[in-house]
Length: 246
Image 1: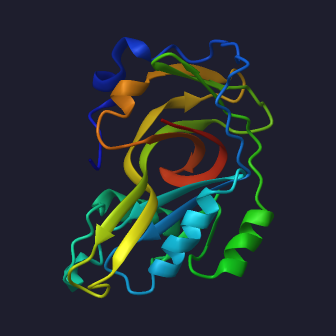
Image 2: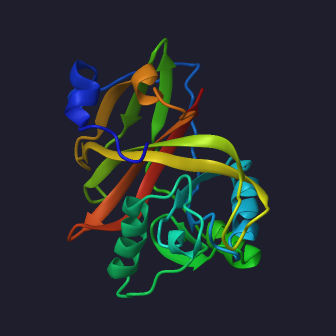
């Protein structure tokens, strides 16, 4: 559930060549958020439940794409996070490294790949979202069992990587041991997989098709397409995003 097979094996002929032009239909499933909020959390973290609840409320906003990455470095305290992954801990470390820091913590929310705040501090989180802006318009359109993604060119920006992130919109977990023992928790927007689709080129844009049944073949209920810059292999600012849920 953590990482999917290589992209070429999964998409095969369904992935269109980049830089084509696709029409946006009237029934387009567009989601144009102003902010992508990534919460780094853990079921074994005693201070995380307020941040988990805040992410749930953020996910109900039309201008926010909320995602929960469950890390694994709290597993040693006696409860193994049912969604935890070393890959998500590494993503959090990569953010810290890109900002010149060696410190990671939970709960942490990262807004548009550019700023990190304590995930339970509602005022700080909302302030970061209020100041946020995504400069790139990403459109998604459902055509039967296919999801069309269209990302226009914008020569004012630098090239970036197109990422596919799958998630579960809701999961109920009874925690039996560890710091949150005895709690029945509701988790939302839980990331189940993440993989690179290809490169968005600022001078030509990109378009592609995704087979929805294959993308949501496990327990996942949502697909997020995120365009994010990288610097020396480390995550940089997020330029645009869109989402689809079945």
